[in-house]
Image (tube, rainbow, N blue to C red; front, side):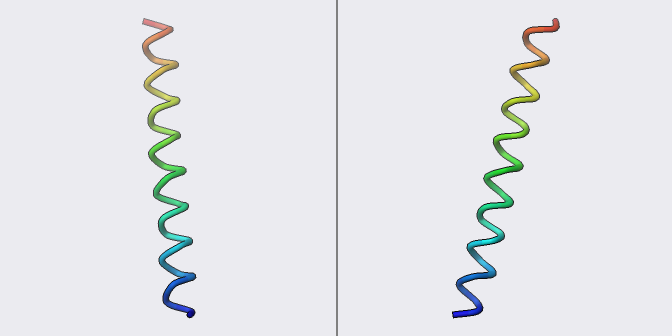
Length: 32
């Protein structure tokens, strides 16, 4: 069970990173 929770946390962190990158790209596209 602990293993699953660790993977879930990692997956959530990964999703957050991906969304942050997408948001940054959108902002960059608007400023350029």
